Length: 155
Image (cartoon, rainbow, N blue to C red; front, side, top):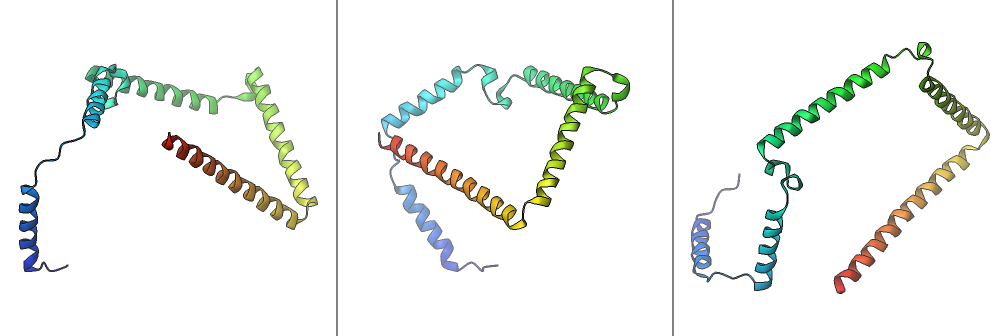
């Protein structure tokens, strides 16, 4: 703990007295007009475009009930989908699922073959090159955004 010096209280009282003696500062007229225009624009917005806490109570309760019902529906549908007997279903969805599984299995075996054939240094070099170009893309995008944003500020 820092012990309070006796002069701190005196300094605070003097500073408070000096600040209270200053005349009030008025906002510029342009700022006042913009603030009141923004307040009027927000007041004119329909209730569904406002923040959730500004909605009418009935709409808030209805939204929460509908959201809970949809969540329950999605959860039950997902549980039924997982427990579905795909072999007995014999539908087009089962065929699509089988083809997607085959595609991923083929891709996995291709990656395994490439891992055995390509030298390890090439793989690390390729990963480093991909990382470099990714960082270059992020950097050039940031530079372009800042350059365009700075131009807009000058207009």
